[in-house]
Length: 375
Image 1 (tube, rainbow, N blue to C red):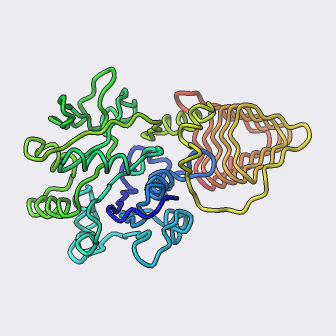
Image 2: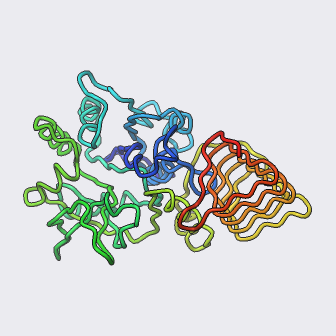
Image 3: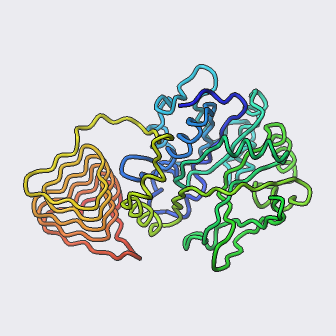
């Protein structure tokens, strides 16, 4: 980890986009959705901040945050267990008179007192619906060099299928200034997709939030940025690295499966910018004689007796003898009993598939088995 960046503090909104994956967030936030075998979605932004020396980070939760708190603990794994600054999990109703928030403005209003007492000059803000290894120092440098009021990170990409009705795209002039921020303006082909990663001065943020709150506004992008692009100097910085967008069950399945391509895996997990997560002391994965595993990503603590092809297995998954598992994403402590056949299936944590069962979905519609269920 790099030395502390005393000029910036971070804010993460873990419940943004919960509505896009209702199956996975009945008991958790978007930020605590398991991803890539051993991680949670929040690990990527939190690790990116830590790797850039941003260690004063607030996570403004709304609901279903027990699993997130359990995962984050004191923030030790991200070097954020600190006497000053560090990881700060802010529950709803953090300040008197503030109701549970709907949009980012209301969320920020709930921590205005906290923001006013901080010393950092800049604030970086993001959601947890994308897995990305992001360089916040590059964003800060671009912001400082341009003299912008707000700088936003964007990606040149086709709008993901699951975000056609829930996206912001940017129109950018030749000087990198955002001239339009468009809500749900879906068009085929490559667009400038807003990644919902922003940097601005702390005092500017406080002023904008107070003004928006006084007028009953609740959405940062729509109510502040989109309506004020002619007044505020909003600059855009293109991000050209790897981004995994989680916006529905199909994209969750697809983005996990894309990591079976070593090129994508290396892009998301570069050696010079590690992704940290909660430590769980597991034994190495055990491959029993006669087992077969091909083109799969397996975390620690698994026991494989059967056949596994093109799968992502999280910690502690057990595949019993005679079971055949293809094109599946199996979360932590899933047990697949003898002679089961599974294809295009996503299991949540602590699922048990009893002996002899056959489950089959498709690439477009993977079967999902809820947490703690038995089939």
